[in-house]
Length: 333
Image (cartoon, rainbow, N blue to C red; front, side):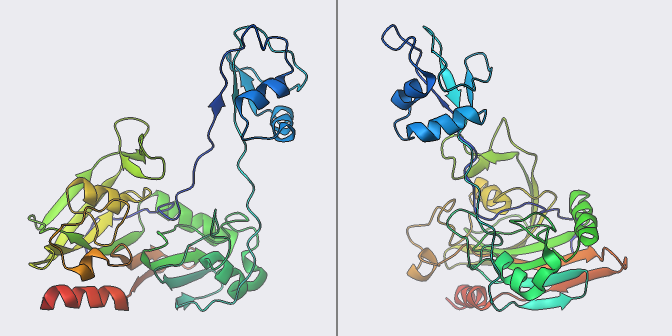
């Protein structure tokens, strides 16, 4: 086992669009003295007047000086401008669903599961059912109520929808607090396996680069110079293959940022096979690799201190069937 540790407490799942804000044009001689709600309708036809009135009444509108304007009948003045902050829609409370779980360990405090690729960890836009949380609510009944919030009950950390591997779930508030502290203190051991494009030349390496939302595409993350969070990824080469060409690597994170491994490996020209967001596919790659249906990333090892007993627990699962088949293809072609 490598001796560097991981703290992927809020890593990567579905990327959620952050609250956007929108600015009006300045009030002109033609629109001065108009009611604020009517002026906003002219500026933002995508919203109904009733919606805009609700925004105004709920402190979602500010003038150019950053002052709240909370009266729909406010008469706008020449050269004024306004910024609206549409509130995010409140997601529905997730419902229990009978979904099979690959449970590696369970007691009254924690649950350790092997999440399959294709399963979202918790509900979000476009994924309100079929998630790990829906399955946990059915499996654990009422014991998860309120633990970690209504939308993420029991969830201490997460991985992408298309990433497979191990997750630990807290079954009560005490366990949740203790596990969260371990992730924050970087004492939880998490090791990933990945298949990447091109031959990785160095046996080991460290990638450092702050990660934040891409300034050119808000649906992607990127290494950024400003407004990013520090991120460090350690990688170790396991094998290289002529086919592809490609490499098999092991990654350990010092930090847990959204899409960290995917962004960092892509930054050194070794994007993950199957990653349609960050990947650059070699034109000469075999069709099997070019159309691999998900990013080839697996959270195969998890180690932590039991939040109640203090005992060190560790779990390891082999590559799932699809990644094992990918490995076999690379080794035999």
